[in-house]
Amino acid sequence: MNQVLAPTQRNEFPRLTAPTPWSTFSRFRRVRWGEFLTRSITFLSAAAILILTVALAWELYRASQLSIRQFGFKFITSSTWDPVAEDFGAITFIFGTLVTSAIALLLAVPIGLGAAICLAELAPRGLSSILTFIIELLAAVPSVIIGVIGVFVLVPFMREVGGPALKGALGFLPLFSGPNYGVGVLTAGVLLAMMVLPFIISVSREVLLAVPREQREASMALGATRWETTWHVAMVYARSGIFGSIFLALARALGETMAVTMVIGNTPQISASLFAPGYSMAAVIANEFSEATGDLYLNALIEIGLLLFVITMIINALARLMIWATVRKQSTVV
Image (tube, rainbow, N blue to C red; front, side, top):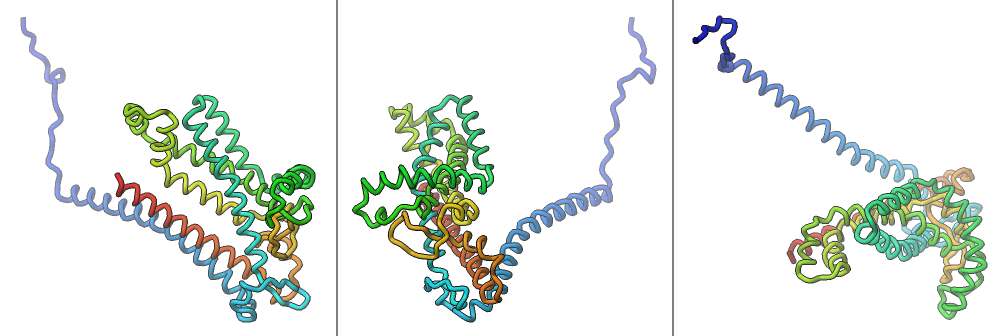
């Protein structure tokens, strides 16, 4: 027996009403204003980086005007650093900065890439995660702590063990001749390698883990071994990211101050021997800025900061061009 439902028990569907022109316009206006606000905020955030960079360069240039007018281009080519006679040149500091950074990369890049390949391709995932966490903790250690370790551990080692071993094996080369005091350019380079190594390992590992699994499976399906797949497929695919990690480490090495200051010897001279003491651009600013009594002396130190800024910008620009050329060549080959 059919029951007749009461009006309140019937399935009633809401009636759809056509949107009015005013509601459509209001919704469109809200969307447009929200999009405009979002684009404006993100644009200002990106522009703030450029503004800060330009402001920093301008301030360094403005504060070093006296030194620039006094010495001109000679400031870059002269090796004289005499605060008493107010005669300044920066080539010794540029030399020390570039040589220590080059030593750091020569030591850190092979070890860092080998460790990154092991952690990303060979080690069990649990062990890899634990080791990566420890490596990232090492990257957060303050540079002054690394410098203290360098003074009490690395300097005695280089003076008593490392230096004599290098002189015995390669003493016929000018790079490893001369007296070995423990402190010097080579010691600073080794300490910088220890500092930049976590950056190379951590970033390179993440880049290798981002390689699609299909790339590896396709290579191994064609008969390649695991090492051939890693070297010829994963490394090639992650090449741009690996280059980025290397140049990130180089930027850290160029600007490092306290650790280098404690082990480089702080002597403004250029020597063919890596055992000889040297000086870096960041170290001379940290050591002598508080002692700069004259305006010309202070302007010369600020100009060294300007030169360090310019060198860092040039190296990063060359790194970007190299990465761009590598990616373009890889896409052309594919």
